[in-house]
Length: 343
Image 1 (cartoon, rainbow, N blue to C red):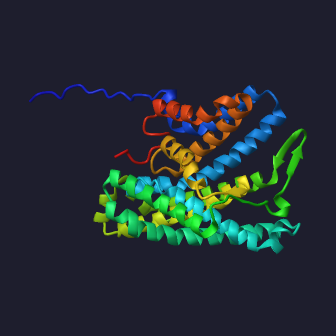
Image 2 (tube, rainbow, N blue to C red):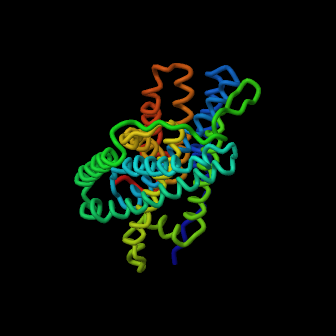
Image 3 (cartoon, one colour):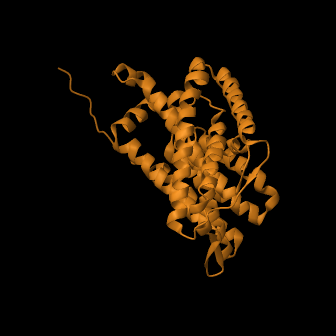
């Protein structure tokens, strides 16, 4: 009988860096805000720029959140996502212009009611458009990335031309509802009222998405489908319906983002969604495919960085977001909080 070999297991203790690594992306936003304060050197200007950057980030998040789920769950490269932004903006603003008795009233409640009606109309229209887009354009090219790029780009062009046919080729200028004009002052800092509303809407949508994805059964199926769709299908769930539902929800969110973005700029054009796609793709890539949390953090970083750089060194504002994406990908090649591996 032989004696058992000596065995003395040792517990490897993780380093502080390893334990902090999962929280590192969350720390980037406050770190960037502190760096912005050092660079701007004026607390009042810094507060104005920070709120403006957060508002811009929230709007980018609204437009990009649906696309990151479509990327992650459906493995669809949808270059036509900007079409939902443009269509949502035109429908929402058109509804808003017909509600002049509400938008011209000096009542915040009536103004917000008008915006709510416009947003609901835009989301309903882009949801229906998303369903048709998925059935007609995306469905035949599942699994073929090159064809997806080509046909979704074609869908975007068709949508832009339809907007021009229906609303005309000219830019449409308008003003925000009466109670949302102007700014609130805090000392020497001036903060636009509409940007505060935008921050509130963005936080509410983010909280709602997190609740649905983390606390509901449909959210569990979506998250499982992002990580392993074949396993979810093998368990008997109709993943195809989940695909369609996610695509429709993503389209509706893009419509919401289009209305908020249009009100932010006070002008809408048929190409506004196409122009926003660069920022949307940057946010989706640095956040990590399929990650709503990563998309949220990425959008805030993009919004804050662009505002700080535009104030300190305007010539570098155009390349600041590209530099941010390069830096993030060198640090984490799969994005900050990747949910699914790139395919």
